[in-house]
Amino acid sequence: MSRAPLRIGLTARLMHAPPAELGFPGKTLQYLEQSMAHWIMSRGGLVFMVPTIGEHLGVRPAQISVRDYVAALDGLVLQGGADVSPASYGDAPLRPQWGGDRIRDLYEIELLWEFARQGKPVLGICRGAQLINVACGGTLWQDIDELVPGAAIHRDDSLYDSLGHEIDFVPGSGLAALYPEMAKARVSSIHHQAVRELGGELEVEALSCGDRVVEAIRWRGPSYMFGCQWHPEFHRDTSGLLDSGPILREFLDAAARARGEDPVSAAAASNREALDPA
Image (cartoon, rainbow, N blue to C red; front, top):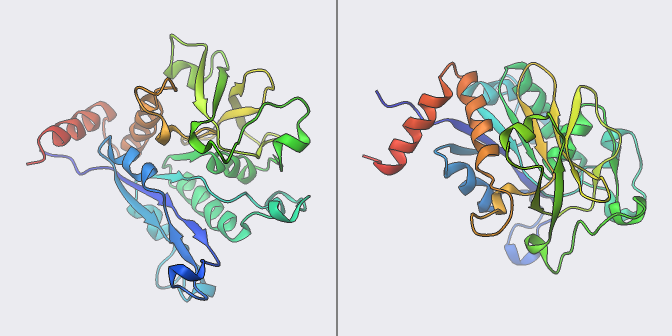
């Protein structure tokens, strides 16, 4: 019997003041960049962008709640985007442009903990990894270039996803176990903020070579929660960057287990359906 595909929630990026040429004056847009959705879909996951929920938005808890959304989904991916607000970890922005998006922080933190409460996995990418750290009580470097002496270049807007650097896997970590034949790898780098003080119940699983900026973290709590600072959805088989397949498969396996399924059988089913949709 065919298994239903895993249903993966993807948090929205928020555009609070869209440019006039888009034709949405005074509105907030919620959107995603297609690479993330296509990456999840490539392993048979169905992707659902999760909108913000709140009474101030005209949606009362009696009508629909975060708990309802999480109950309908099997896992959550926190995607990249605007800076995490320093207000979310008890700090003030050192530059006006580092003020971040506090509204998005609150929306994603509420989702993250509801997924954890329901025993469902959370995967954080770039900003998503930073959000996991902040949700667990950690803090961030507001700007690596200014505040981390001797740091390598971690973001170059002229190169965007063409910039990369090497990372070291922490021996004995879950990430190292996913890549047993490797001690280091090359990854994409599109961030100017990073983990500063590590949040509670988190472990570091990868560090940037040379400057030791944190590149991957994992929660030690009862359900799956992993964050990586790079963008695995931008990695390609021929790019020379770390194969993103094991990270996605581990996350989807955790989603299958949370649904009470054997992850091996779920993976085989999704592969068969990809080869023979009929």
